[in-house]
Length: 303
Image (cartoon, rainbow, N blue to C red):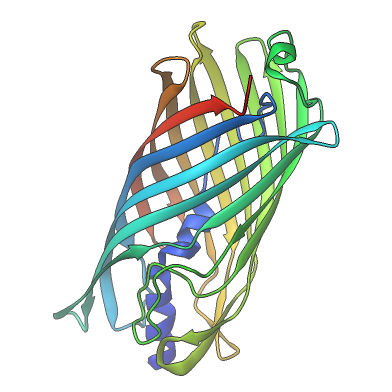
């Protein structure tokens, strides 16, 4: 019973689901060298959490409010375009479940989430260009790669099972392809997330997790000549089976999700990105949906 209870509750840990469900249109777009982007916004997600049939916990549900803040800098990487990004979220999490069909278990917690640092380089089809050169450039096929590292600096209490932070490192290498077709752009990205051990898991246990594999696709269309664009996205993820003290716990993660995104320029330096996402299927029974609004401010490093 204890093993099944731990397996069920680990599905409430938000960092794992976030790694699986990330959808980022235009992640491998070419940018003029020397631009700085400041990002700030609000995201909300909620949904049911599926448990193993033998678990004492049922009817799981969670709500997450987050205020992410980020910085992006476009780079010249040996003549190729690239960028480096840092994102730090402040998160408010509420998770509930029914214990033995009667008693409600509830956890409310707020704090900083684990920060993520991402480095991306387009090694084909996207040369490093100054803003004046970029204006005459037209995209064809871009091939790039990225590496995202998430550090265990967020809120974590080893005496509580549900936390905002994961108390472990994760590393996600990814390969991306972007093909422009007039006002349309087709994108495909494949990657996997590796997780380090959590040696301070609940009740003094050690938690391990297998790599989580993901494939995402995006169809983006320019909306007029103002710089506005819209995208439909879908992702498939599989893997991520967890182990407690070397003993496998329940089923591995797996499912598909979709999202709609629109980016609307306010002026030359500011834009707002709106998005909504929902689950299409999930092996574990977890089904999340949510919305996001992100403000973006851009400025150049110099003249």
